[in-house]
Structure formats: C-alpha cells, structure tokens
Image (cartoon, rainbow, N blue to C red; front, side):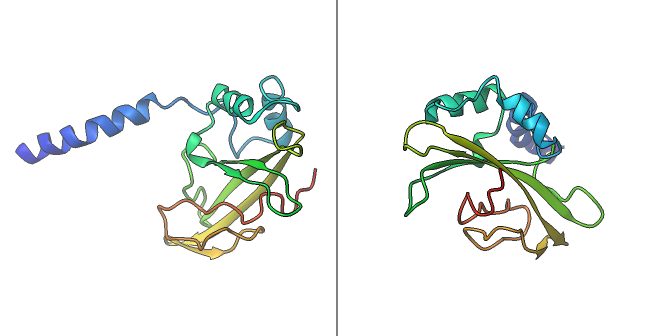
Length: 161
C-alpha cells in the first residue's frame, strides 16, 4: 500500500499539469483554411515576433514546439511552430504514421511578420523507430519514440504558398 501512495504522490503533480493544459485551438488535423482562419484575428502581417507569440498563446499553441531560426544567408529570420494532432506526437493509426503541420512565420525585414507558410509532413514509425523520413530534411537525426520528430533544417524548404 505504501508503494501505491508513493506512486500517487509522484504522479499527482504531473496529472494536475496535464489536466490544466488548455486545448490548442488549432492542430494538425485541421485544414489549412481552418488554421489560416483561426490565425487571421490574432496574427497579421506587420506584427513583431512578440506579438506573433502572443497570438499563438491566445490559440493555446504549445511553446514546446516553437523555434526561432535566425537569418542565414538569403533566408530571413523565421518563427517556426509545429502542430501535432490532439494527443501529441504519437502514431495515430495502425500504419504508425505521425502527421504534423509546420508553420513558418517569416520576418523579411528582421522584425515584422511578412509571410506565413503552412507545410504538412509526417513520418512512419515501426514499433518506436522511424521508418519513412519526412519530406523536408530534419535538423537532427530522428530518435526512437517518445522523442518528438526534429524540426526541419530549413523552415522554408518547399514553402508552397
């Protein structure tokens, strides 16, 4: 019985944090049109990085999957955000696919948002190991689950908007 109480004491804070996490208003199961419609009232061209992040906060988008890419060569600075399906980055079907939507907020002048790209991608896992690579080159090697898929090396690779 003592072990059960100890386990409950250890897990209680984690469960409380999970229960308090607000549900994102956009996720990888939504269409581009839905995501863009949800972004429109809270994120517009001309906004600063801080304002874009505040808009993402308003949509309850996880801060865990946001990454800033500094300007490099011809590429301007980019705020990268990855959306997963509800429940996170776990294989969502029998074939073992994890799908996601990457959003790249481009700051052409270095300080103000000028463009937003959406890119759908995914990877197939067999067991807990990746089998099929994503379409875009990852910035790091894939790890076994439960590690999330790494972000792309170039957040604007294959931008198609």
